[in-house]
Length: 437
Image (cartoon, rainbow, N blue to C red; front, side, top):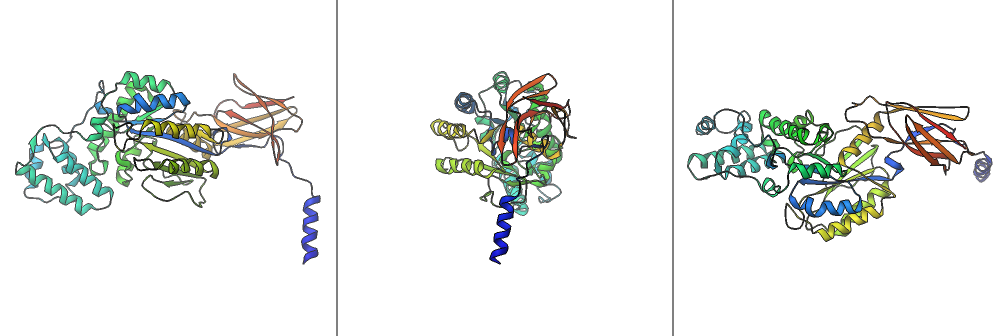
């Protein structure tokens, strides 16, 4: 047995190392060949996100994604409303017919538009219960609400949720300027409702009209991503949102992606999936060392996309974090940017989907390597460059990569398989030509 093992070892040592053939090309898992990806996201669009946090991000040259409540922004065309039967008819009907699966969504949708202070709280309570799978309890909450309405227990007035009120303070003009700085702006619906409690008509109004205001003020590129409020994972709500937006932070049920929502205490762990989306949300009670540990996990695993979810800043918004902590945390991320690709939620989504669907063809003839990359995804949104790793002849030290009118000058790198170059390439356009000296 010992002789056999010795023979195997000697054979392996004497065997020639098989090098990758020049021209062999693959798409790196993450942009620029980094170990992992990080997306810094913000919910609600409260004013200190822009006055305080955004300057910190700009100082560090880190892009972020802001999911904004569009209905409260001055200049928006669409605001909160109930679409359906007359309110008085709904109220009258609740006196004789208990809330059930056939009338729940209509009643819950109308709750915030009765012209009273209080019913909106029941809309939120009912939606939370549906999200938790407690539908019977949600029905009882709506019955209690309308009983109080009929008994005159609520004062007249217009009620908005806290997130909607905290979002006041900015307008479309500065948002457009922030977008030009490299940040992604995306929909957080018109009024920040509990989508799981809305009927189809009112749910689609929230999704579609918010999209239209984003489209009209920022352009088509910013209609890619959205986040249903409260991170809802309600299958019905997510299915409707998916008809309007190509990417949702709520759910991304790709066969090659392991999802860990921010409410899930799981860790990336072992998985047979190509990618892991690791959502984490810092609150006022989250220790900074734990927040840094999320980053450490991401850059050490090589398959993980850390999606950070933030809300309030310096006392304004839900679970506000102090700017000093944000500055230290984002600086920590910046200091590890050699291993981390920090990009918007939309860009990371696009990169993964392009990579998973792309086909690469390459050939080495004469003194040139030609690489062509294609994918079947929509050319409207999926135009982000991919990072290619192509092996080149060992004597190529300086390499020119040309695609159309774009030229990159590259230095050869080496790994166990030989010499290679990393470079940016676009799919569905002209091939890339590599030549060396």
